[in-house]
Image (cartoon, rainbow, N blue to C red; front, side, top):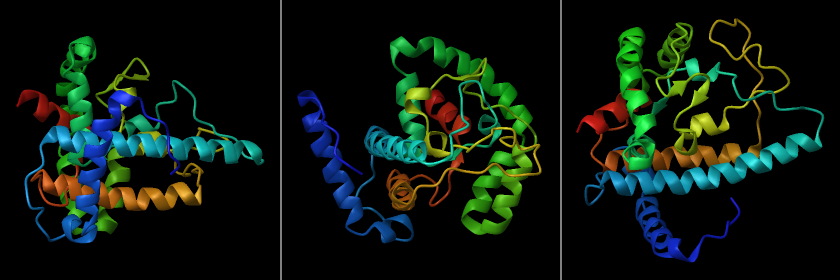
Length: 242
């Protein structure tokens, strides 16, 4: 992804994150699978990695949108379309930590209170699906996809969605930043038997593949359950309670 100018006050932060990513990248495959990172990462460090990746992904999404605009297709995603918000949003700890830190700020106390109020109903409606997806992700990829679709078809709106808007939009996970449909959003629902046509862009898609390995490696380095994501509301709720 191309460089974006950072404010001078962010320089020390950027250098620290770049160094941490370099350390993880020294054996990215190992740290993402079997090898233990030399030290346990703090959640604020994991959050910083997610923030850095989100910035890079957003630049890739912008480039993809520009490429689509130059062609014959059009993006169908608009504010208020909540089809994707009914999918189980499975994330690793870096992205959950970024949402948690954002909600912990005093200026976001209303969003935090709204989420905490919405969480019990979400948890009751999603049932065991979220835990099952976490287990299947690491053990059975084929059944993971099928179970994910089944959970999506329950139509359980994300606990961070309030009146059609995402309460944590500035810090939303990568899957929520990149999963855009083309032409029409009529199939952006788990109830649709016809899948939506997803936007593709090779430079961004390749970058996302590398990004996933880095998120897993960072997750493992925080001593999260190795290689297993969690549903975003569940992971954030646990962090807020702790």
